[in-house]
Image (cartoon, rainbow, N blue to C red; front, side, top):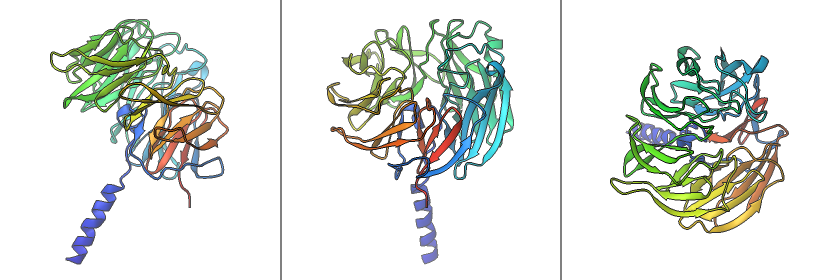
Length: 402
């Protein structure tokens, strides 16, 4: 009896400490908020660096983590024609496999971006990688090809010469993409098992880098698409539109987030929006011109919203009113990566590799400034008690070391 009791307790403890998957752009749920605990506050190239793995080329995609494996995309070769998906062991950094496809769409883009800008997504069994060329590929966790599509082959006008970056999301067995660009623009729900369209809806033409997210609105799943005509909520099963907020147009590059039943949308004015429900229209709760984030998507938790702009100005505002509680200038530099909130801390990473770690709360409190000399544009994620960062040339795992 004692042995059985001990076994049950062990199972409960294992379940309690199971690592949270960081399965998509900005981690679980795509919201930039992680449930991970015991993350390091201080690190450098010589301290709390568990491992570092070389990458074959640049990428803006953040790593995704599930089932003890880390997946990341990169691009290389002449004119970025080589598009690579890699898999590493999360504990050791050992490369488990590397696969590549050759670009079928245009690789023209702004110098700041590249073809590995969209973040891949994983369900633990497969990884689905979208590249800015419109190439979409699915591998199983061992690197075997499940299916491949050239979206530019299906939709020949797809593409833009600045570079596409919107990342996919998953709902049940559907892979959801928003392909807004200078050519044929659409959102699509793709069967993740076969790669075939389940539904497709037209979207406004125009360059857009905002990634879709799936929210729960009164218990119902909705996928939010933000573009030049505002925010639209759709049924992820069918693509049918449920409600719209036409005044909330995209601001630039940052993606929408969600917390406490409220949508927080970067736009010409940063907007807190109560989603539409039934026959009720969505309601704007507040707007602010002081919280415009630039490239960095916002995070919200505990009644507070945190916004970082391109110059490293961190603002914390009351999520109910938009009132700014504090402002802090992080280390001087350029900021492209979205912040991550985890373990009661806000992690703000600049392009030069300096991460400012701040205590979350209603007062500004800087805990550390950590430097790794490399170029970082991808957003950090956390899983298994570690923080994963990707630079132009390497993948880093940061966590307590013995």
